Length: 191
Ligand code: PAN
Ligand code: ZN
Image (tube, rainbow, N blue to C red; front, side, top):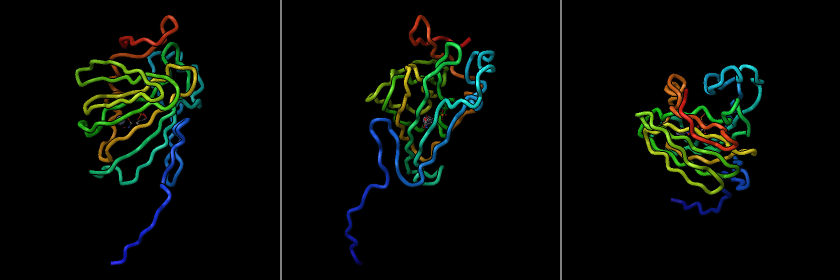
């Protein structure tokens, strides 16, 4: 058999200043305020805001088919700074569909919090900042919150057969929320 010796350029590149991924087939889903109805606590304030405002966007590399066992997915999420009332802009949050699948997150730019919740609805949070590294065990719901006044970006890597269970969070939410109280972010029980 012929040995095809070759040195190639990498398929993807990352800009370490903001986490932006460059390469082929990078998908870029965007979440606007109108896509996040029922996620923020203050529905009255929510209903008065511009639904077209972008809250967060994801860049993701899915090198194998979603659902395939053994592959890995890579994503970069950027959450804009802002609040709905006192509650900071954040992601929808989810459990994993294959609930035992774990995930790594790491902070790239800005500052925020990783909100975590176990199956018994116990919540806690980890601070996120450039260089912070977070292991999210299986069976733990996760949501990220931008508590700063600049963009928050973080990287993520998870197994390709994970899937996302958003419905559980749409139905029951997280038991705590990250809000600005006395000028600083605090973990407050959901009303
Ligand atoms: C992340 C999240 C991403 C967006 O890649 O999917 O930050 O958050 P939502 O999916 O909750 O909208 C991840 O946790 N993947 O499993
Ligand atoms: Zn996840």
